[in-house]
Amino acid sequence: MVHEETSEDTFFRELGGACAELRQAFARHVGMSPHRVQLLIRLRRDGETSHSELRRTLGIDGASVTRLVKEFEAEGLLGRRLDPTDNRYTLAALTPAGERTAADLERSHQAHQERLLDGIPPHQQDIVLGALRRVRENMIEQESR
Image 1 (cartoon, helix red, strand yellow):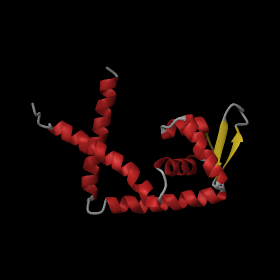
Image 2 (image 1 turned 45 degrees about the vertical axis):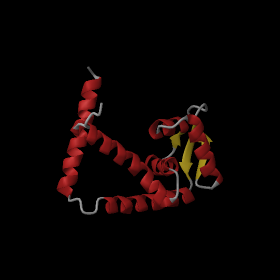
Image 3 (image 1 turned 120 degrees about the vertical axis):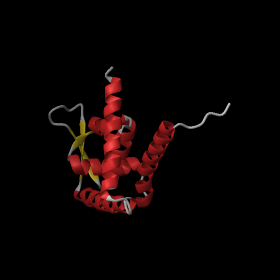
Image 4 (image 1 turned 120 degrees about the horizontal axis):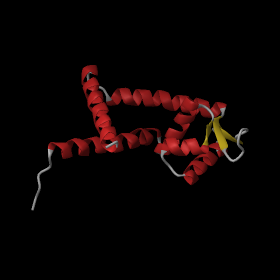
């Protein structure tokens, strides 16, 4: 038996597809993995950050964070040190070269986003944002029941 797709199915299929494609598109544009991009930009925005916090904010496992940090360290883009308040934790921070690389990534990302929004007037962007906020509010409400 064939079932027709509902409008809800279409909405969430399109939303999910757009999110998945957006995460990959900029990374492809700059020739870097999405996690590499996210880690550099996160460190630029947050400053020195623990591996455990990077794991949480990037949504990847600890081994992946450690591997990425070591790769960036070998490339001279970041440094590591033990957390002086709790030596069980390692902190990562951008080097001056890493800061320049992350700043270039952010500028490139801004231009990329502007190109993606080309032809979509601000009022339509606001409508989409309002709908997404409402979906998130509904999700939180459903989960609290």
